[in-house]
Length: 384
Image (cartoon, rainbow, N blue to C red; front, side, top):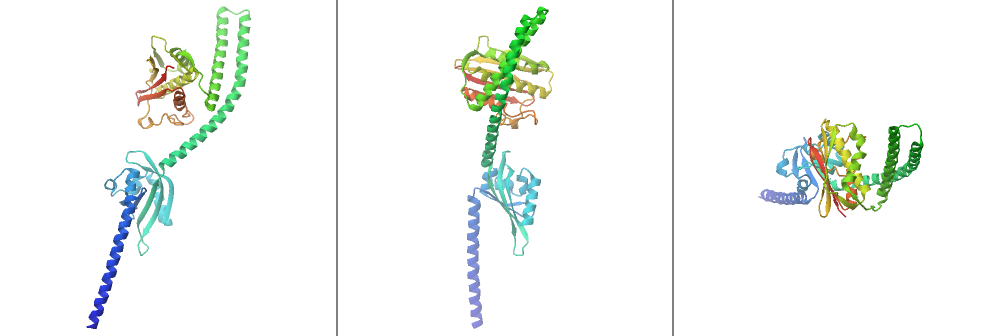
């Protein structure tokens, strides 16, 4: 009898302990579920093969996938570089844990999400590995900010170097300008020259002087750009300025099968702005159009330039039938230092500087492009 009572007491005690453990397990599971539901970080668990068996709500926010969409996926499938992620996982298995900073994942919408990832191995009571747990924090905004700071630093360094170069260039330009004037006087007084030769030499001397003046204007503008100088506004004809820009890129057009078609407004398109800044914008856009046509390899290149004047603004469009801009690059072409040209061929400054100039002039720049068909850049600038 006493034995039965002792067994009943022991059984009751075990039952109470088991109930206590169940409650504790339920509370622990609830805490874990609460963490998974409320954390902004991407928390995931995998089995020994790397298949995802748990995915937090924060992960859905970070990568855009719901649990139902990625159930059964392998975690490396979500990374931009699966091979690198497999190496990362292998490193964590060897060391018990691993950390990788700035690892790129693929968002559901296609863009890159950078995360700081921590991987921890899960083992059972026998010390056998049963899976992994990963905690990933989205640092994309921080990484973008870091990249912008690097770009700003590069731009500051470029400005410093450019200012020194501009000062150095101005000295030989002054000598060239003086010599060109002296040559023109000599040609005028020279004897034994035919009228045609004299006219040709005088024209050459004037062109040297004109291009020297243009170079000095550009160096002064470069210094002004670095120093954020205010634009020097004057009244000018846009059509005439476009003709001057076309002449400036003439050497590139001379040996290329490119036809330049002018759809200029019949009436003079006069406006008050900074003509030097505007000319730089036009030259940049024309140069890009020439490069796009040459890259396409067409023997029937065509650049169409159109001007239109309204009551409040001037609209200038430059259209080419070049290679066009790939869709994945269209939201980046105006970014500083972004270029589609191969290394050594482009700086990624041209369009960004154009956009900056137009902002200074209270204008704007837009474009439409079809890959393989061509691109149209449109400049909008207030009349005054």
